[in-house]
Amino acid sequence: DKGTEKPFTGEYTDNEKQGLYICRQCNAALYESSSKFHSGCGWPSFDQEIKGAVTKVPDVDGRRMEIICTNCKGHLGHVFYGEGFTDKDTRHCVNSISMKFIENKTEKAIFAGGCFWGVEYYFQKEKGVLKTTVGYIGGHKENPTYKEVCEKNTGHFEAIEIEFDPTITSYEKLA
Figure (tube, rainbow, N blue to C red):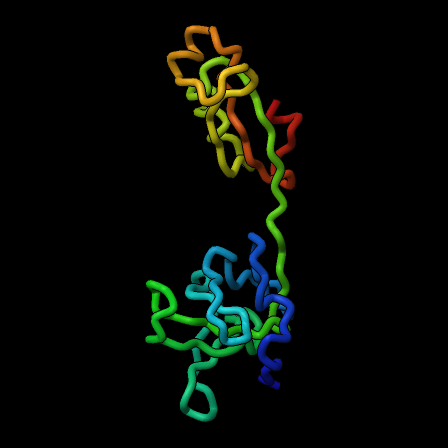
């Protein structure tokens, strides 16, 4: 009935986990956690919706702009402009009860396989790999330089840390 939950009572108001907010009614993706910010208004605030996920319609009172799920037309909240909270100068004020949150579940693995830039090149092409970070593993010297590691007198090996989505790939496949 396009109602609004009381401020500071919603389960996602202070949620800072990484993930995806979806419509509680139809499961359509609405907002990525990267667009969420703390506005202090008492409801989850976002400065950008997933393209095409949210429709803006004038509220019945004529003073505000309502936001609804484009897919099922379910009420989400309201959008406000010109408040200066973010560079986008937009605040989607969304009821927690209108959404469900799906946390990003990632895993990490470290591989040492020779030149880390060469290995990184191939890992970055693998489906499910979200992030790669090159560096050194093992050894006895704190913060060795690339040259010191290549001279093989620090005990370090070039390595790469892989962050991956286990729903898309597995440690075994990456290995």
